[in-house]
Length: 304
Image (cartoon, rainbow, N blue to C red):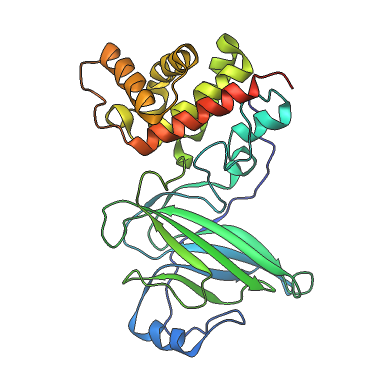
């Protein structure tokens, strides 16, 4: 059974109000940001709330008129490679990495309402004064040219932040003090969404009993690709595991050498389970990722 070991104290506060008169926090605040904040509203910002004379809690505030399905104050991964996991490695440490963000899942907030703030961390005026502090935040929200995207914010400040800290203006422009705020709208760039984490862990536990750890990691990695690229018309994560199993078996049997051969395998599997041409529009980039997984799986099984 997958066990969560990370502990994080969640807190929510309602009725945050953006104030144009607030001063930007952090040593990198620039004059043009101060001018911008008068004529712009932030879609998202950070706000510090005092705990005592020395410590502040840091809240991420949803300043839009729409609820956010989730807020992740860490880096969700796209695949097991980004999670620094390995195919063929059956160690407990590797299995923990395969679960992607299990160490941080207790810090995920579901259904963050408009004008609601969620605690993402804290700073201490003495202990953190000389430290370069960094926060990663991911939220699902529309982009400037798309109805859906995932925004990735990277905040770095010496000694933490004080006061109010805009993350993204309402015209989708980036405040100059931000290290980066990226709009991820392409399937290849999007991480595995945090709202399907428990579903993914349940699949990991279930398949391990039938296929063993090594084969289950391979199947799960393939299913990650099927999910991210919407193969099979964006089936729910837990409903494509049978196809992932068949694809893994056929990859092992047929030993494809290029992405075109992988595409033929994927199409054949979906033709069998559904109808001809069901997965005909599968991305070649997805096939390249599956091919890389197959090659890594083969390499992991060779004797050293």
